[in-house]
Length: 171
Picture (tube, helix red, strand yellow):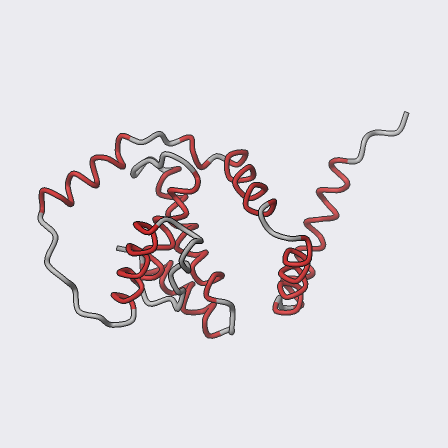
């Protein structure tokens, strides 16, 4: 069950006209926080992201499941089920307590270090590498277009700080 704050942030993103993936990002963020604070673990950054996306779909974010060939059939089916639930489909059968507890226990046994800064950066780079340069460029252009002036200014300041920090001291 997502926290109220997360659902509220996603709703705010939706009212601003942000993309469904941006709205879903709030749920992924929450999941990463859960792993970091030790609520449960994740085998990899991908798993933490997948759990967050599933929560987002169930919460009603209009994030369609992956198309055939993009993900395994099992993943696709799970995403489809979560999406339908979020769009108002009635729940199938009530899951048993035993099954729920087993799933929670399995996540408890997973490592907590899978969502460290370097691990998430690695995951991001791997995901970007699979996309074409034109696709990445188009996404960056859209991001700049839909960002508010204040957010653009903040991002520019952050970038400048990073560049300054990374600049080697002159000899």
